[in-house]
Image (cartoon, rainbow, N blue to C red; front, side, top):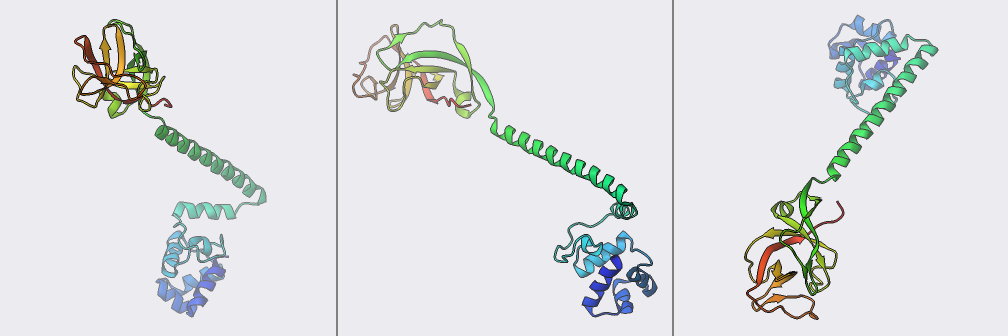
Length: 249
């Protein structure tokens, strides 16, 4: 089989056996034995012919018919020896080897698939952090009672620059800050004693807690059906609203 492939390659070059042997740098008698099948070339000779004539070793070995599949791989000596051993097996022996190779090929495919799935899952899973959570105490309506010492729950949120900056999360009640903030949403809050005009914050007035926008003349509700809360000495800032909490983590 190898001899036939070598002859085919040589004849395409237009060289005779002596010229071909000289071109690849081996003795004429040695090459002649390769082509007649008296001897089989070792892996170094196969690699040499593959490189010089730009054909794959698979083609030289008769494992494929298309020469265009060039240099699919270069056989190591150990791999070539395995091929020689395989050729020496009878039908039953080849069935055994093929069965084991099929098992191992399938195992590697499954392992590769599992590894890819693990990597994909790791990429999808966001880093999380735990933060204090006051459930629906920020009123976007008429206000709700807020105790300074009220116990907080904890929730997991995505670990982002915004969540790392936040001191706690608080829930929104009512619709007075729509369309910016809706009932049931959660917002990140950074503790602060002062805000700039136009910023949204959490405010306490007496026993009421609000999420409002700080205006020049008071606390603004973005929903126009709610009146502005006029300035008062008992209004204090609890914190700055940094943004909404993403729910689908």
